[in-house]
Image (tube, rainbow over all chains, first blue to last red; front, side, top):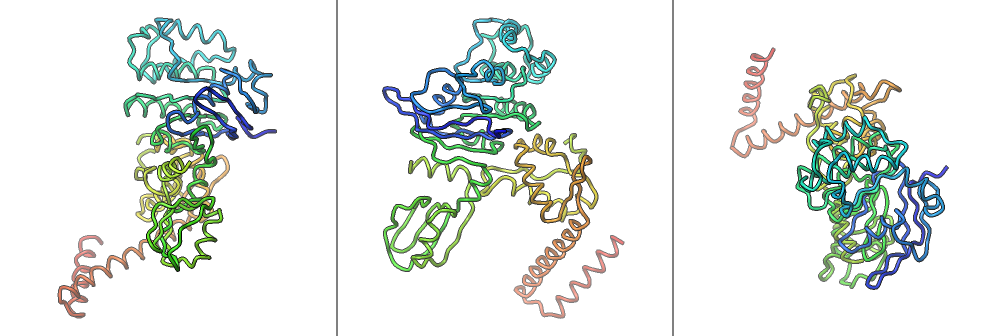
Length: 291
Length: 137
């Protein structure tokens, strides 16, 4: 039994001005996975390829252990999808949009859909084009959740929303996925939106995944190290060593304590060492700067 | 918060603080225990309830509870939930004693810096004890 909800291996896709990959990405079942990266990093391309929008040049995407092309229909029945490009405007009324989408899903839960609409303050008769940006995002989430999908793919689900709408949406999302049987992949350029509840994180930049793992483990792995070296040396390029400042023998760096960097510091006679824990933000900024 | 029956409320946690989030939940629960707001045998909220209240993922809360369980501060009873252990209360007493000692050390330092001699400080301490015991039997 495969315990991965999504497994991407060697994924590549070239556009005129952008190259994705080769990219490996692993989302464990039951995880809330935050795929974070600046604009243009490749988040949407990755999510689109999982959804079968566009064909990859190379690599494989498995969802629940199934090939995403060979088993497309089976996989899509288990996915709920939200993206800022997704517009239900042309159905005019909320009820028409819902009737349309639910016809594709045998597992549609009418009662649950009503509950969610009620909780998010949307009625069946609302006119979609007159809804606020926040209400449209909420509608998209209701539509994505109502067939109780095993996997939710959310591409910037709260783009452009105010803090209150974001909170409502994430609170609803969290209560919907708390049975741990559901997996969520959220792509976002706003770290602060998802760092609270993303228990797994992948940092993507220029089409490459720079770091991936359980958020707590990742944070435990890095330290901000201040120290004095025995002599003034220019730090070499070592994997897992991100120098922030150094002058003479004073030295400050973000360090992967599992990597070779700690050994190097010891070798160079580092003294007055302080190692402080980091935030996800520190890590994100540093990796994207370097990468 | 209603869902917690008003018995349990840890301070807000923040992803802006360094280190993993679960560590802040661990600290929050310990603080509640050492302040006596959580007592031995008292149930803790479920993973889901606490996750929803703090707006964090269930995995984060689970990790925090595992850590607390490992330290013997809380225990799980299959099917019944998670509770504060007796050991947790002992830790509570130790922690409070340590805190009292620190506060006393600070008061004494203040007194010394203000030019009080030992006898004056002891007399002051005795007076405060009498007053506190008098009003709070």
